[in-house]
Image 1 (cartoon, rainbow over the protein chains, first blue to last red):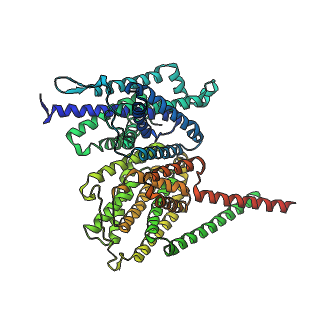
Image 2 (image 1 turned 180 degrees about the vertical axis):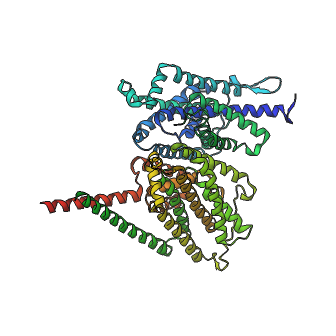
Image 3 (image 1 turned 90 degrees about the vertical axis):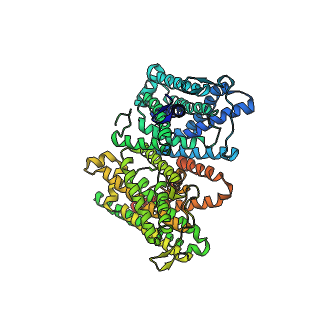
Length: 295
Length: 336
């Protein structure tokens, strides 16, 4: 069993693993986008830049303060999430009464500013970020070598995604959130501080992006442009899944990562575009997305 | 009686707006005709190409209410096609531009069929994703020359007669193309078809309930916008004798949104003003590298937060308010 369809198993499983890693980032990012969109009705174009900020935040903590990966995993989402909350309070909050397109344009402008500033400061070559001690090395699974860090990324992001799903779908806090998504006026009338909830939600979504950034830092180099292409792919993922369902975003993210990995094995020329092609097909068959409900 | 007066009022306002538009049109003509005397003509040709691009984009955003974040694909693909046709197949310039335009209309038809299945924010995300797909196609396809693009495109002889290597001949050609596109868009906006587009922008379900097939109207608007963007892209490929990847990249799609936003969404002259302002700014900041992006982002944020009508929109708003105040004062003196 060293070959499947003429492809060495080693290469096949290697690409599938990379696909799953990318899938975890897609899932975390599209989950954040879906949570933000649900309550704010804004598509957060800054998401890719905030993912990049998460990676840079980890790098800063390491080089300037000597705080390692584990600290970064906790602190970076909080710090970047806090900057997100400031942006929400100062800018996005002024746009809720207007057409939703203005929110898209504003966050697009912010993404340009943030990426431009980082590129000015750090160029576009990328900075190395060391893997944490505890996760170096690899396991021999018999049919392939599994690097520990990659296994950790998949397991941890899956856990974060499921925890988010649990919080939104099964807890009281989540029920407030879902109610406010349906009808913010009514929820406010029940004495719940909706504006504060909106700010925290935006911060949370941004925090998820930053968390993905921290996890990406040891795999890819820390680069000002790392979020630029990713965000467009994640938009396609969001269109495919439909933003109505939290679980839908998670599943679509992981599955599309796998599909992309498989394409790299069987038809590498299409690996950059396969997700966009799937998006076009899904739109023709089910315009609301696989998990979306038509409105 | 009251209804009568209101009607004459509407007619008067309409007449006044037409007069203002005529003045603006003459000013624009004068600017592009006399401009080359003081401003570098190649820069002005670039402005005209992008002004046409932004006007075509505005037909979709300003008058139909559809925000496309992928218009670079039409500009870029038309540019590649025209450049390839002129350089490899030896087409004359007018045929090269036609070939580029045909490709972008076809691309507009295909991507439009996919994108109009969703509205609002989804529409923007879908067009962005489709454009990124086209970008990757252009990176990999052999005829685009990858990172180098198609260089040294011959401008050729227009209709086999007029040599476009002459800057003045090229300038006049671009000016005629721009003016033709601009007037066509003006005509579309003021036709019954344009009125339906505006109705869709204001309230789509209601337009559907009145018996209009909104999807067909949106698709046609999308194809028209793609076609005219293609004219702009093909022309600019001949002007600069270059078709390169930056014209298909998403930053270009963002730039045309910025031009329209700065100039004024849903105004007739706004995109032209916006193209001039944005390109002048880029020209000025060019030596500062990444700062161009930062300034662009800042302009986006400032426009969205405080200046949503854009330059042309603010001007029109100011004139309208002044007229209203004037009218009020007149009425007050009459009654007293």
